[in-house]
Image (cartoon, rainbow, N blue to C red; front, side):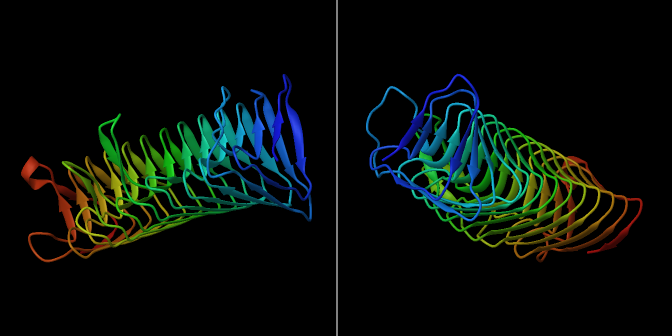
Length: 348
């Protein structure tokens, strides 16, 4: 069966030990643009499954749980979501997960959790497995904020060529089209497919606190003249590490960098440890190390690689690179840039 609701007002939907399988569409479909408060009743396990194909409809049906508006999860019960055609949990507005929740999503043909505006995780346990090519564990066209709890995202799918965009993409544990912010809790990501990434953002990535562990084992995905590299953490904008504990292991091939910023990279504190095949920590522009502990070990390239100036102003930095011409600490000398050391402890 299935459950569909139309409402001009926000509403609460309590799941009290349900088991719903819809063979030709979503198990739960909210056609309301208002807030849907999904409460998981204490002591219950709730299972939702979609079909392997969806019947045609004039209404949106983008996942096993879909809402035209906002999806807000709370309650101490358990939710198990199985997605066979599209996303596991999908909202055209935002997805918010409160403390004490226990949510498991397994998707074989789409993203785990997908929102247009934002995904916010304030606590609880969230476990996601996705296996489709270029699928994302958590995906937002807007922002992603993780403030607490323990979130695990595992992807096994490979890369994919998009004929409309004329581009290729890989799977990602977490993918934000806007900003990504880690304020607390644990985030654990593993990606094993070609071109896979642990955490990826089209704009700025900020790590303020919490524990982040990322493993990527895939190699480069290539389609004709297009390719995408497997990376641990990648920001198309600036990347700031202000605190917390970050551990990254990226062991694929050339291009498998541990932490990469396509703009400036700044480390203000915390502990950052990276083991990679290619550059351990790389910035397309300037790199600033102001405080914290940094351990960077690159098997096949530089430990620290700034394509602008590298400013080391404090903290403790240990950086291993491979043999010459690569090295532990590298600024873009060919472009007229330098390594500038004004403080801290540095071992190369």
